Image (tube, rainbow over all chains, first blue to last red):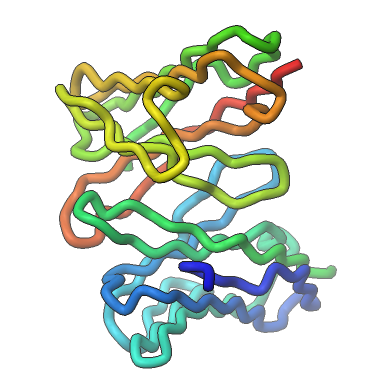
Length: 111
Length: 115
């Protein structure tokens, strides 16, 4: 079992819709969970992170964490074509809080 | 957040040679890391760059192949040694301030092609 798993997609949604991105992790000791956005040819950009069960909202983005189910999700409301990118889920571990990344989900928002 | 720069931004190298990649941060940071992103793949951690001591390498990565230096809290280098075409990747440094969450921010990356 991979440490961090994501649906590779691609995921396509129409403009204005809600995009839902999902991630599961295997290490129950993981404490913090991160969502990065990566545009083609660019480096990953941190969107938000979550560490408590429940929802965390930041603008159009909502991260959801369920530690019992070892599940993290990212919802993007009112999706825009500029949201088209690969979204990477990451989990920190170890004494240096290193990140382990999922394989990423490619999102396309159709105008 | 800190401004992170990497040099070079890209390079094309011959098999058997070595390349040193620099990562510079505009403020002191606790943690620095080096990642590799192979074509079409996600990010894989190579090592944690420790200030004033040897880097901590992940499974599958060794110091002889990827020597790392971190002389101070704002600078680190990664060398890719004795390169082969399989080393063609994007190499990224990231920085974090430590602590429980240690949010990491990435540099722009170095795109390496080995012929």
